[in-house]
Length: 108
Image (cartoon, rainbow, N blue to C red; front, top):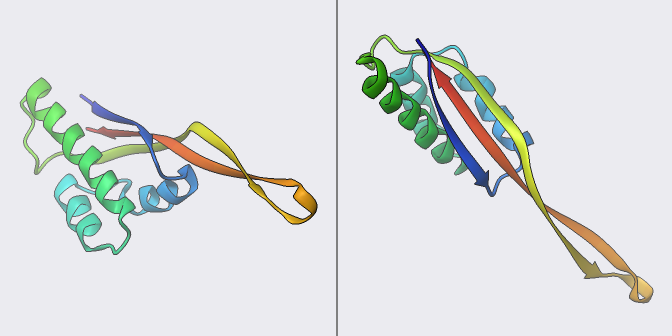
């Protein structure tokens, strides 16, 4: 009995989201939300939103209460990448990569 929530095209690199995902994995949903609300990173709010959505999906799908749900998996995959260029010395371009990510949260 697992429910999931997917957030796509989040304007944060997957590497930054994976740091937060490791802190939440295996915890109860209430405990994970409390931890994410205390973290200073603005990216924690995005992860908290996905955890709340996955918990709501579990309640609607299986009538499971929030006290018994745990965060089973958090996957931060690579999304699209915007490629821009900045001028550097002698008129040469320097690439800038704006990374996006797809976030999947599974509770059970």
